[in-house]
Image 1: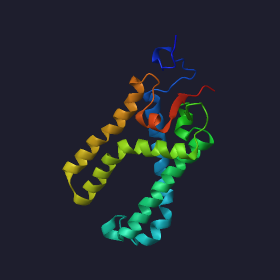
Image 2: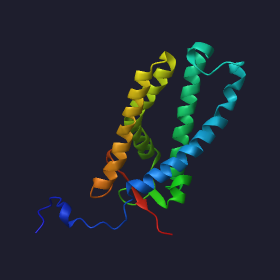
Image 3: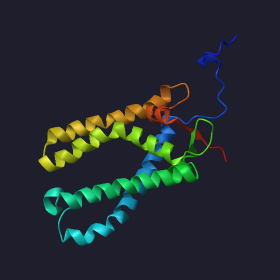
Image 4: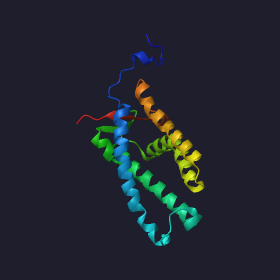
Length: 182
């Protein structure tokens, strides 16, 4: 008899949750696509470079901040567009994955933004350390940043050990990644 309490041993899962291996495969594929999209998104900033490297000391903080904000907007738009329209990025299509809410519906824009934000929590410290290490020419900071990137991998590995194969950012955003059968 169930007194309204959630007994995880009696939960019936009507979907097939995706494991870490497929997620990593889709992430690699999508990372390549995002890099290509970001390269194209850099084109509007070329006139400001005048044979300079796009770093604050070369182009100034204003241009650099605008550039980073633009790149962030492009990344959010890329994932948000695909997750809210089809539930799949191109990498997820290749690996037969779909991101959805807990009821099996497409994500709303607010859910997609939450998912991106919570996923970034694990990856950003590493990327920030690596970016700063480039400015300061510090091998220690670069090594620290690379070590911090392991936080993102640990979060992905949570999908292997979780009963519903959900990462921390999926739990916080109320989403799940499932295997999509054609």
